[in-house]
Length: 148
Image (cartoon, rainbow, N blue to C red; front, side, top):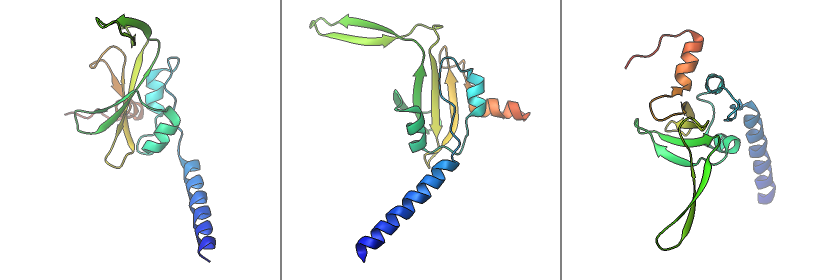
């Protein structure tokens, strides 16, 4: 009897998971060809959990703690130059570097305490030149910007 109940429970969980996954809006992909404002405007905020973000975007290049204390996953798209350096110990290391303005774009997913994407931060030339999905979506809906 117990194996039958386990199998029934497993199949029920699988059906519910499949049904819920079908209801998730797929976020846009981060590519060099995509216009950043279009990506930010279309990103479904408050709907994408970490697992779905990982499944869609892959592993982030690194994670950060944002100034507001929330977790962020950083993704870079674009061209990076491979350079090999030799240490005084004669050990060689290859690093991927980028120069400002060569088309590398950075997107950072911001997660709330429940692990859901609540904002996407975009930067191209450094920390202070970016946009956020919240900014773009509010502007698109015609809402006034939030003053701090």
